[in-house]
View 1 (cartoon, rainbow, N blue to C red):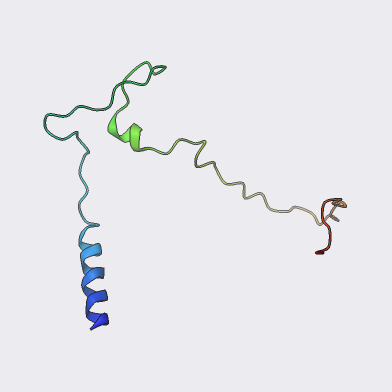
View 2 (cartoon, rainbow, N blue to C red):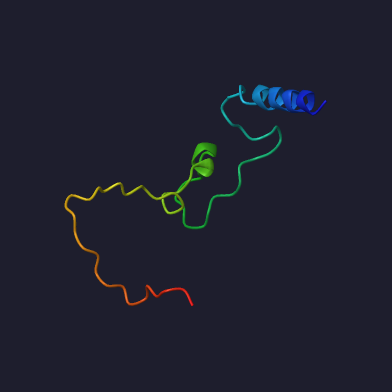
Amino acid sequence: MTKRIVLIAGCLMLAGCGGKQVLQPAEGRQLPPRPALAQTTPSPDQLLGVPPAIQPGRSDELLTKSEERRDDRFSLPPP
């Protein structure tokens, strides 16, 4: 019984993934007002985009040479 419920729930979630279309405000509604310091009203894609401050780029810098760690005066043993 639970397998059947899980299967049905999975199919419903998978069915919801296929719809992709251009976002537009609902009929009779407008986009939110222009932010106070913005020069133009942002588009729906700009409003949904993640600003770089929230999702910073990764730093995947690999170690190029083996170095001893400096002493860390805050690295104390557990009490």
